[in-house]
Image (cartoon, rainbow, N blue to C red; front, side, top):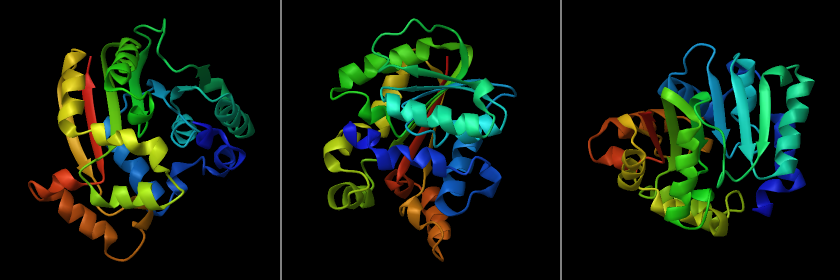
Amino acid sequence: LAFFQNKAYCKNAERVPINPDLYEGGRKYEFEKIVGFSCFPRNAKIIELGSGYGKYVLPLLYKGYEVTAVDIGEKLLNAIRKAARKHKLDKRLKTIRSDFRRSSVVNKYDVALCISTFHLLAETQGERSRIFTNLVKSVKPGGSIVVVEPNPLNPFLYILYLFTHLAPWEIEKWFIKSTVWNLRKLFKNCGLSDITVSYIGFLPLRYIGFPGVALINAVMNKIPVLHMFSSFIYIKGRK
């Protein structure tokens, strides 16, 4: 996954608006949807698996949460640490360099996040499931696990992954296994209860600022059957 550790990608940590209240367009829409869906308890301890350059870690720190960022890329974790120090948020930040195939973290966090990275964890569904099981183990009884995945039924994602350099197909291709049925099965196999699914977006979020796009997405997300073609699947369960 060298693509996600190159200099340009890591520099994104310095560009993340730390205060999410200042977000605009797709970033604002996406962050608000994730926070609203996750329902973080007050003073929650959060772990994010596949934290990247800190797109969610940094604003969550700003909001007052304790966040542990987990990633295999030391350059990415360094970028997060640097940005957190710059904004005096590093006291609530922990970082772990790991692929989470093996983990001794048990019953420690209130919420576990895996945002658009589950399909990147490994090349086989079985290995991804084993890593996810370790993530579940890290959460306290009664805590919640939240996964956001690109929806393989959305046609626009194939255009994005196949014909742009923003998200190369060779890296993203395993998202085709992240159907809502497979994700539900994953959650049930891990013994999670109160499983909730939501469908967010239809047209790519990068165009949310264009006239009418937000309205089209909102309408599509409410229409039975058609909502299953939304761009992202949000799913959460309780341990």
